[in-house]
Image 1 (cartoon, rainbow, N blue to C red):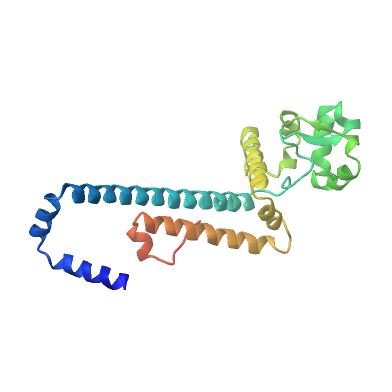
Image 2: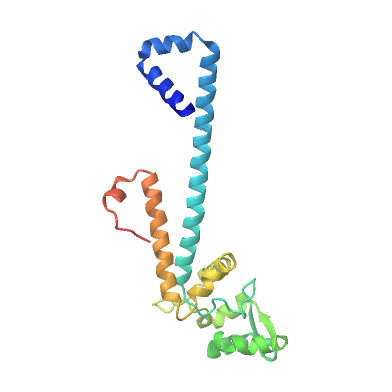
Length: 218
């Protein structure tokens, strides 16, 4: 019944000429104030909703950007227990006093081959600082350049990023490093990233994106 009355009232208001309707509203200060307040409230709610949607899209896009980036980087030290929070590497204590020898040990044996041994006997290992092992044991990180050069600062930043992504997305990173699930998971993450970017482009009214669907890019 209420819906019928509201519908009838709307039709009656629509039937009133615009000039007459404006005159009625302006001659009624209370009604005019009420309408202005309703408009302000509506605009405020719309702004809040837009901010929420944009924030949600930002967070989802950042997550899948991180995961796609992570999957494309060398896996030598991914999820490694040998790599500490400050990027030191755990090496046998017997070699620790000779920093160069420790770095050579890492390069020759590889961090992954020492992983299980370290987990069984952690007390026999000591942390070798990044600035030390990065000078001689660069192959341990898995990062290489075609011309044979080595960029320690780039490697440091990349390893810090790897650690951050792993900390924020432990389940996803574990799946990405799984021999059976990794490829599928990377494809899924790439698809999610492309979808989020497409939605953002539509919200921003990018006509090229809409016209060229389903061309997506990560």
